[in-house]
Image 1: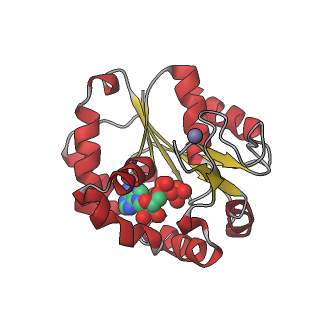
Image 2 (image 1 turned 90 degrees about the horizontal axis):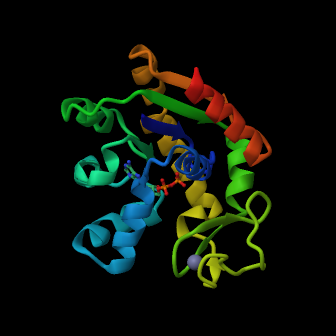
Length: 210
Ligand code: ADP
Ligand code: ZN
């Protein structure tokens, strides 16, 4: 099963991707996580991406397309994969088509902008291992401490309120047109994001069954 998760920043794509990984045993590929790892490691790609990310903008298409093409070549993608945060622009979606990547379903998680803004303020990530948490929806066992590695939980620079606004504008302008793109291919399924993570997961799983 080859899947794409679509949705605004903070709609809960990453969290739902983890649930699909657990249930179906296919890898989740997050361009955001790959880019953040590159920034942390100080690679050439990371240096190039950092300024765009910190400002709440999109990283140039050729950079992320290169990342995804490499990643999809790896052995673990043979039995299927979930793309989380890619494609984010029409040219990125076209690049997948041109590379002959067959997508079975595109699940779009819909959350209104007002809710996104409120949610993002509670989002935290581990400074050491980059695991993500939420102060309301996905609490760590000990406040401010990563369950996985004991690292300190911090707010991502691009989760600052002004930057979130900018990311939402980018989402509506650049990413939302993908809904029509995949609807025209008969692949789009829309799921309304719920208050509780588990309720959204139930809807996502149902969308994958149909
Ligand atoms: P979100 O929480 O917004 O879903 P991600 O972790 O997916 O955030 O991405 C963080 C940042 O990384 C984005 O704001 C953008 O700058 C960059 N990025 C991630 N994926 C892409 C992509 N497919 N195209 C362009 N930029 C991307
Ligand atoms: Zn950690």
